[in-house]
Image (cartoon, rainbow, N blue to C red; front, side):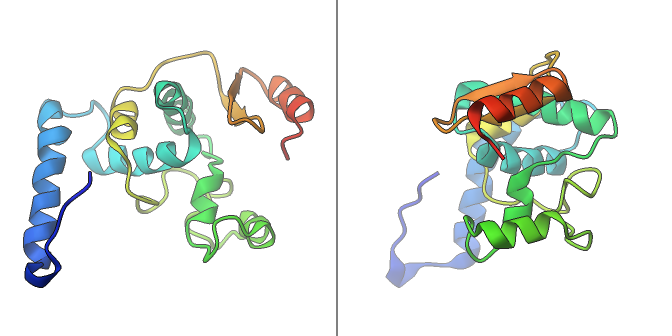
Length: 169
Protein backbone atom coordinates (compact mmCIF):
# COMPACT_ATOMS: atom_id res chain seq x y z
CA UNK A 1 0.00 0.00 0.00
CA UNK A 2 0.94 3.60 -0.40
CA UNK A 3 0.13 5.84 2.54
CA UNK A 4 -0.09 9.60 2.39
CA UNK A 5 1.29 11.13 5.57
CA UNK A 6 1.68 14.63 6.91
CA UNK A 7 5.24 14.93 8.25
CA UNK A 8 4.31 17.63 10.76
CA UNK A 9 1.61 15.50 12.37
CA UNK A 10 3.08 12.03 11.84
CA UNK A 11 2.41 9.61 14.70
CA UNK A 12 4.18 6.25 14.58
CA UNK A 13 1.55 4.32 16.54
CA UNK A 14 -1.30 5.70 14.47
CA UNK A 15 0.59 4.88 11.27
CA UNK A 16 1.30 1.29 12.35
CA UNK A 17 -2.35 0.83 13.31
CA UNK A 18 -3.34 2.18 9.90
CA UNK A 19 -1.09 -0.41 8.24
CA UNK A 20 -2.50 -3.23 10.38
CA UNK A 21 -6.05 -2.15 9.61
CA UNK A 22 -5.29 -2.13 5.87
CA UNK A 23 -3.63 -5.56 6.11
CA UNK A 24 -6.75 -6.88 7.83
CA UNK A 25 -9.10 -5.25 5.32
CA UNK A 26 -7.23 -6.34 2.19
CA UNK A 27 -5.99 -9.78 3.27
CA UNK A 28 -6.55 -11.22 6.74
CA UNK A 29 -10.30 -10.58 6.88
CA UNK A 30 -10.71 -12.62 3.71
CA UNK A 31 -9.04 -15.62 5.36
CA UNK A 32 -10.82 -15.86 8.71
CA UNK A 33 -11.15 -19.62 8.21
CA UNK A 34 -7.35 -19.86 8.42
CA UNK A 35 -4.75 -21.35 6.15
CA UNK A 36 -5.07 -25.09 6.72
CA UNK A 37 -1.88 -26.45 8.26
CA UNK A 38 -0.19 -23.04 7.94
CA UNK A 39 -0.46 -20.03 10.20
CA UNK A 40 -0.52 -16.34 9.30
CA UNK A 41 3.14 -15.88 10.22
CA UNK A 42 4.16 -18.71 7.86
CA UNK A 43 2.06 -17.18 5.08
CA UNK A 44 3.69 -13.76 5.50
CA UNK A 45 7.20 -15.25 5.56
CA UNK A 46 6.50 -17.32 2.44
CA UNK A 47 4.93 -14.33 0.68
CA UNK A 48 8.01 -12.23 1.44
CA UNK A 49 10.12 -14.77 -0.43
CA UNK A 50 7.66 -15.17 -3.31
CA UNK A 51 7.61 -11.43 -4.06
CA UNK A 52 11.42 -11.51 -4.41
CA UNK A 53 11.57 -14.81 -6.28
CA UNK A 54 8.86 -14.30 -8.91
CA UNK A 55 8.36 -10.95 -10.64
CA UNK A 56 5.22 -12.06 -12.52
CA UNK A 57 2.07 -12.03 -10.39
CA UNK A 58 0.41 -14.74 -12.49
CA UNK A 59 3.30 -17.16 -11.81
CA UNK A 60 3.46 -16.58 -8.05
CA UNK A 61 0.92 -19.30 -7.11
CA UNK A 62 3.00 -21.86 -9.06
CA UNK A 63 6.22 -20.80 -7.31
CA UNK A 64 4.34 -20.88 -4.02
CA UNK A 65 3.25 -24.44 -4.74
CA UNK A 66 6.82 -25.49 -5.46
CA UNK A 67 8.16 -23.90 -2.28
CA UNK A 68 5.39 -25.28 -0.02
CA UNK A 69 5.93 -28.73 -1.59
CA UNK A 70 9.59 -28.52 -0.62
CA UNK A 71 8.65 -27.54 2.95
CA UNK A 72 6.04 -30.32 3.21
CA UNK A 73 8.55 -32.89 1.97
CA UNK A 74 11.29 -31.72 4.37
CA UNK A 75 13.46 -30.27 1.60
CA UNK A 76 15.51 -27.16 2.11
CA UNK A 77 13.90 -24.27 0.25
CA UNK A 78 17.02 -23.10 -1.58
CA UNK A 79 15.66 -19.55 -1.99
CA UNK A 80 18.54 -17.26 -2.91
CA UNK A 81 16.64 -14.14 -1.82
CA UNK A 82 16.90 -15.23 1.82
CA UNK A 83 20.70 -15.25 1.71
CA UNK A 84 20.70 -11.81 0.10
CA UNK A 85 18.37 -10.43 2.77
CA UNK A 86 21.03 -9.32 5.25
CA UNK A 87 23.52 -8.07 2.65
CA UNK A 88 24.16 -4.31 2.60
CA UNK A 89 24.03 -4.48 -1.22
CA UNK A 90 21.50 -6.90 -2.72
CA UNK A 91 23.54 -7.54 -5.88
CA UNK A 92 26.97 -7.97 -4.25
CA UNK A 93 27.78 -11.31 -5.91
CA UNK A 94 30.94 -12.02 -3.89
CA UNK A 95 29.18 -11.45 -0.55
CA UNK A 96 26.16 -13.45 -1.75
CA UNK A 97 28.28 -16.47 -2.72
CA UNK A 98 29.98 -16.32 0.67
CA UNK A 99 26.56 -16.29 2.38
CA UNK A 100 25.49 -19.37 0.42
CA UNK A 101 28.30 -21.33 2.10
CA UNK A 102 27.71 -19.94 5.60
CA UNK A 103 26.05 -22.55 7.85
CA UNK A 104 25.68 -19.96 10.63
CA UNK A 105 23.49 -17.68 8.50
CA UNK A 106 20.00 -18.21 9.93
CA UNK A 107 18.49 -17.00 6.63
CA UNK A 108 20.37 -19.51 4.48
CA UNK A 109 17.58 -21.70 3.13
CA UNK A 110 20.02 -23.74 1.07
CA UNK A 111 21.67 -25.11 4.20
CA UNK A 112 18.89 -24.75 6.79
CA UNK A 113 15.53 -26.52 6.67
CA UNK A 114 12.18 -24.81 6.98
CA UNK A 115 11.17 -21.22 6.62
CA UNK A 116 13.58 -18.44 7.55
CA UNK A 117 12.98 -16.97 11.03
CA UNK A 118 11.28 -13.81 9.76
CA UNK A 119 9.91 -12.27 6.61
CA UNK A 120 12.64 -10.91 4.33
CA UNK A 121 10.64 -7.92 3.17
CA UNK A 122 7.18 -6.51 2.78
CA UNK A 123 5.08 -8.79 0.56
CA UNK A 124 2.44 -7.38 -1.72
CA UNK A 125 -1.14 -8.62 -1.86
CA UNK A 126 -0.57 -10.95 -4.83
CA UNK A 127 2.29 -12.67 -3.00
CA UNK A 128 0.21 -13.06 0.16
CA UNK A 129 -2.61 -14.59 -1.87
CA UNK A 130 -0.14 -16.89 -3.67
CA UNK A 131 1.30 -18.06 -0.34
CA UNK A 132 -2.23 -18.70 0.95
CA UNK A 133 -3.40 -20.51 -2.21
CA UNK A 134 -0.47 -22.33 -3.81
CA UNK A 135 -0.93 -24.18 -7.09
CA UNK A 136 -0.13 -27.87 -7.05
CA UNK A 137 2.11 -29.03 -9.88
CA UNK A 138 4.58 -31.77 -10.78
CA UNK A 139 7.44 -29.26 -10.45
CA UNK A 140 10.13 -29.20 -7.75
CA UNK A 141 12.54 -26.64 -9.18
CA UNK A 142 12.47 -23.39 -11.10
CA UNK A 143 14.76 -20.75 -12.48
CA UNK A 144 14.46 -17.56 -14.48
CA UNK A 145 16.22 -16.82 -17.73
CA UNK A 146 17.89 -13.47 -18.46
CA UNK A 147 14.52 -12.01 -19.47
CA UNK A 148 12.90 -13.04 -16.18
CA UNK A 149 10.85 -15.86 -17.71
CA UNK A 150 10.08 -18.68 -15.28
CA UNK A 151 11.19 -22.20 -16.24
CA UNK A 152 9.86 -24.81 -13.79
CA UNK A 153 11.23 -28.34 -13.87
CA UNK A 154 10.29 -31.74 -12.51
CA UNK A 155 13.76 -33.15 -11.85
CA UNK A 156 17.33 -32.17 -11.07
CA UNK A 157 18.35 -33.28 -14.57
CA UNK A 158 15.73 -31.06 -16.20
CA UNK A 159 16.68 -28.16 -13.91
CA UNK A 160 20.38 -28.54 -14.75
CA UNK A 161 19.54 -28.67 -18.46
CA UNK A 162 17.72 -25.33 -18.06
CA UNK A 163 20.73 -23.92 -16.21
CA UNK A 164 22.96 -24.78 -19.15
CA UNK A 165 20.45 -23.67 -21.78
CA UNK A 166 19.83 -20.28 -20.17
CA UNK A 167 23.34 -19.82 -18.72
CA UNK A 168 22.03 -19.48 -15.16
CA UNK A 169 24.64 -20.15 -12.46
